Image (cartoon, rainbow over all chains, first blue to last red; front, side, top):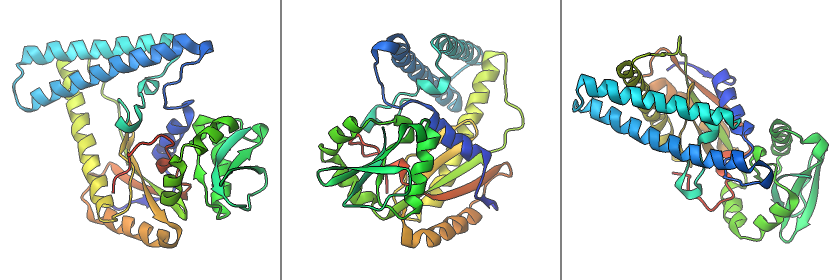
Length: 109
Length: 205
């Protein structure tokens, strides 16, 4: 580790990501009710999908999955992620918008 | 009107920032035309911070209304934040990864293996950031993960800022990081990472 710089595109991106969302909190607005509800529902779905992905990785690490099981689980999770992102896009939501802030519990994703 | 944050007493605010007294608090307000975007509001907050104005910043993305700021100031939660944040700012630390080409495996097994590698790299970056920040013995935010790296903020007093930056750099030289990982430290910034208005205890020390 020999670099310490004052400017970096990745950090700028991090800052912009944090600035770009209207708010991290769940906000239900009468004018944007469909998008707000979609954000809540799809956010929870993506949260559960990521939990399953982590569990699958853990089982790979411990060697308790056969090759066929890895293929099946991987395909399912990959397609589930694509489907959730496609649905989110239909409501004008980016993948980053699906991270729900649960206050004291932190973010779901 | 967009709220930039809360201060106390009669602070000297830079041009373009107005004040409204609200009990013991002074709400810092910007004209909407000068604070249309989150970046505009952040720029004004940085201007306040650079002029040595002590304040609790509002997350720039929130675009908080004055009435909401008044409600929050009556909860008592701000007192705790004021004690924690007054006289302090934050360094933002980024461990950025240079990714040559994103892996897009078409089969399920390859996809899962790629995620396994990403998870290992993420845990490694977590450990590196932990190594750097642990010995600072300062409040830090939970690590944030993005496709390009891992990030966190460190809260420090103005008087110790130079020493803290030097210490972060010293610690960074000591850790054994892969060649495609680089460390970036920016600051001091207003302590935005620590100013959650919800009564959350996200900060660790």
